[in-house]
Image 1: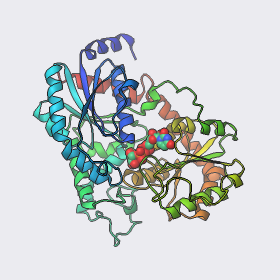
Image 2: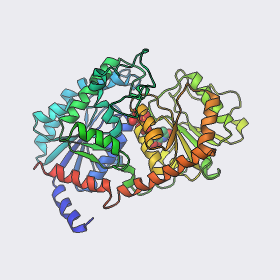
Image 3: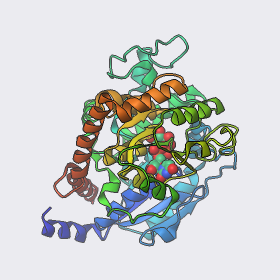
Image 4: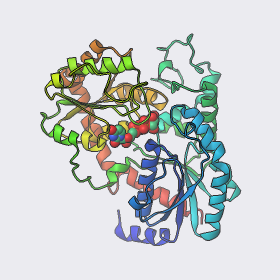
Length: 455
Ligand code: UDX
């Protein structure tokens, strides 16, 4: 990048303020705060409007201004167990408080350039229009996943949706290959009709926005980007990720899993984590435990309290399960995932394919075992295994023998070696895109210019 050009841009941006509005869920809030950091580094002032639920800690971001709005959610409503209901409530209960907050901010601050809203908050499109404020959308998932959601009406028209007991799970969706009916983003709980409605609404409000920002990079999502550009040729799209690649490497953590990883051989450990929302049954939990144990491979397993329906934490494990493994297995409630994935001992990631986890694995060059649970995870698992070819998809009911075989295939066999080679090649591409001149760095500059063009 030419430094004089960059200084000039910052001189303009420093007079301007951006208002960001994140959804209060971990997989959405964290990347939105990273996006805020990036835009701050370009010279913008930042105001974050946030709900009272899961509010961010302002002391960790002293350079931002925070404004809290009441979300009106009861304790039971605020649970992510029924995600569709939660999204519906966000889009009804936050409307008035958000409007009032935005109105007061705009009267105090004349130099607001635009609103950047999480895509899920679809109501913000009409609010922004009522204030004649440009609205950009931050889609925290992948482009590929979003491209599928934006085809929901067509998928219904063609009879692929809703997925019912009569659907043929293995049939390829002709309009979106290589996805099969079983890879379409469904939800385990909640009303499928409401899910359909909210997805269609979100897509239409993204299409009406001034542009959409993705935490992804061009080389990874050529197919997703082509589908989107065909569908919305006039919608500006900004793939400016992966966000964590803009940061300095984080200082080494002392947490127990890193010390444990330090004792293991290079590329020997399978890391297992299913993100912040997905849940499994007691029977699945036990099959996973035995599959990991029988694989003879060292494993680091994140068992989040709440991961297993009806269980507090590890009480379902057989007696002396961990002791009998003589240190080969390590279980934690939470792991510093990015550090774990970049640790030399980690050779594979058994993941639910949430977008953040998938991208973190791509950036660390760690091959995956895909075990999608709901929504975009289904699409991503298919892309990881069949398009990017950097993982194996676990297709069937969770069963210890098959788990053992899949882990061995990835960690010890020729097919696993080829997958690892492709993962490392993709990691190299991920590593250059945020560097000056890289595709994401260029898209970030284009985003800044686009925001400033509304003066
Ligand atoms: C949710 C949805 O489930 C997913 O489909 C969508 O793509 C994003 O939002 P979530 O379940 O939170 O995702 O998973 P993911 O997107 O992978 O995000 C989890 C984040 O938590 C990652 O950044 C991961 O590094 C972090 N994490 C998770 C840890 O740091 N430690 C852990 O032990 C577990």
